[in-house]
Length: 92
Image (cartoon, rainbow, N blue to C red; front, side):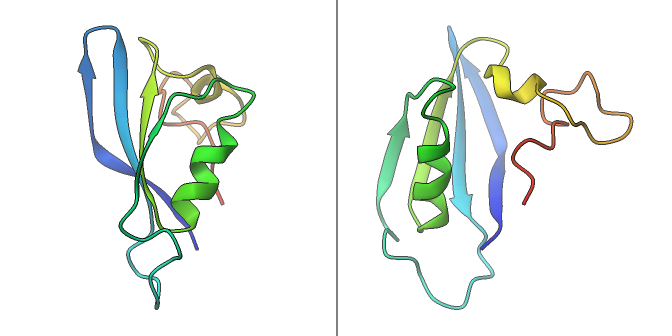
């Protein structure tokens, strides 16, 4: 099940909010379909939010200003080295 970060992200004060959900084209809802999760994890636990989203939960990730450090982790999509959404760290 591919992972998708919503296009609607916004900055609120000292944090960024990003909604993460599993791809909508899956045949059946996941076991956590309808569950909403607030993800406050740091780098050591950020994979947990992705796993919950892959299982069908809507995950709202709260990041520090400028985004999570993993957004600046290589490899990057060609030409998007300075773009915080250009990291292929979460590509599946």
